[in-house]
Length: 497
Image 1 (spheres, rainbow, N blue to C red):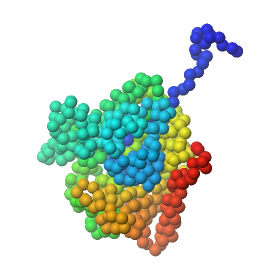
Image 2: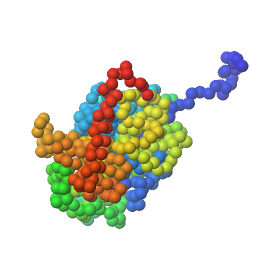
Image 3: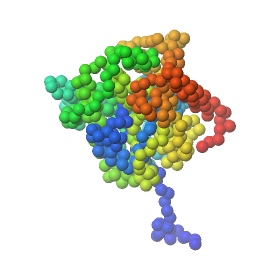
Image 4: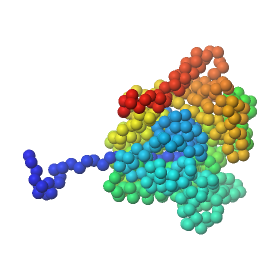
């Protein structure tokens, strides 16, 4: 039947308008352990909003970062490529200008793009962020050296009556949590990031284009400063602490791991009472994030975009919290490399626990696929909905990151290495059962995760496991040979995805 112009104008319902592409809301936090969500089995921590999100998400139980360091990990998320490929190996170094980032793919596909909070680019300026594909930029890296470029610091100077007090300063109240913040919750970076995220959501939601919004919180990263009431939220709870270790335990580990644990002022002998407060404050920081995530989810629903928005929640790495004698990260123990990963898309992604092995380079191609955007050949990750699961996951770390900063001035010298480590690039490969960590020239680690989930017994030099060590080493070698395959093949030979 032919439709006249009058009929078209009088009966627009005859024509179905193209559906708006799904929005993407990506919530990133910093240094969050996998086991510090209620939905992941922690019965002490209070995360009702994240648990609410988890209940409607695919909750991946075996997600692993490609580096236990902020910048390399984040660069892998946003390029879908491994650190040795994108070459952004340590913090506060520029990304290779030839690399393409997730927000650029989305903007090219017609999306509005926005970032709030910790972006961790170098240089850490809004102008640089905009040059890399962000339309809207509100950034705060949470580090004093980047304060001159922080939108949060500028906002706080204008609004907080106590702006002269450092945003990480502690109140110093005797007999109370030694990490209690000196400033009010409403003026913290956490509250600011949540409010700016909601503001950007409102603006994007009112527009006629889909949006890609990256909301990145600094917490629960150290320092463990937490304001009232979160400083006292866990006062009455005794949180189980990791086993205390001594120097003899640490010296059984490969030299690069020893260097990490013993660098600067070692903390392995920390007073257990102080460590309990660190755990309580860390939990308080997670609960702060939970509050803001709940408000953001509510705002998304009010905007009317909730049913058409893909939500990602994850982190750049975990935190040892003195497991194996170490604070922070930079190692391949599960507390550092295994991370929470929630993925929600109402009506499209089935909610429930997912137990397959997943790498965080898989996040970008998964999002591109869900939004109908072609995945470039250079992307090394693969969609989590793309068929057969992974046999193993991979992570890597350059040791100078952990001993060549601040007062620890130990530069790398070709042929001699850094701080006694001749070949400082460490690699990890992990299957469902086995974890193998390789330190060229310094031995390795092999852990049987099925029988030793705490990674207490290194089997690397045990003759009974020589075959397993060789098998894992062969897998690692094969992986490293083929990981950059598409970078090495002439473009005219490549079959695009």
